[in-house]
Length: 305
Image (cartoon, rainbow, N blue to C red; front, side, top):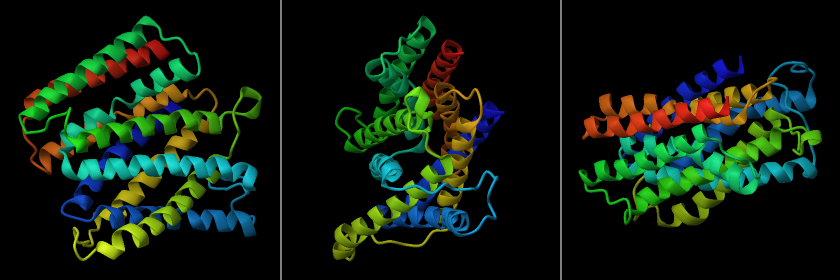
């Protein structure tokens, strides 16, 4: 069941990335990101309030546990990590083709494995090392495809923003493992709905501060903000994808390494959107790059089984 939910979460993430690209087209990044965090918070706020003041959600998957500073300090740190990743990712995806961004983001499971190798002392087997090498090869091949569109991977700061977002996303994935693991297994053992609800709420306040301090004073001289219904779709698909993701991790036998890999299958959806909806170029060479990424994920999956 948890594996089926991981695939469902991957599909939802693909739509999330696609609507994010649509919402950011010719639009100001900071207000779009603020509204995304606001709508995501509004989605989960009723669950927080109903769980806090009534017993309506007791025993359901939507019940949100209460907690004090001892729990919320961990969630606040997650908010900072995720929001940093989002800020970099939003700026990058606005200026780059989806067919470039998607495969780069799909290398996150490799970063998670390398992080586990470096920080948790986990040892990679031959299958996993093969997957890592294929992902590295795909990145270099993707840089060659990017040059055809005038994108220099070494000197393009939008590329480095996407890479930075992917690294921070991998850090967030490793941190999720720590947050969700029971205390008896070295984790914190936090309630999944509490984590998802409150990290969105904290991000909303952080983005509100950025909106007022950084964007608003200069909004007349920078890229203007325009309303796009894709902004609402971004929040809906992200909230649904994360809900299914956290729920899958809470089920017995769920493996964070496998779930993380499966979720990166979202690149298939976003790649198709880039090709069909945004008419992006050089698809033949990018399909080869994408195939290498997916092949690497298959090797990682086999090595993690």
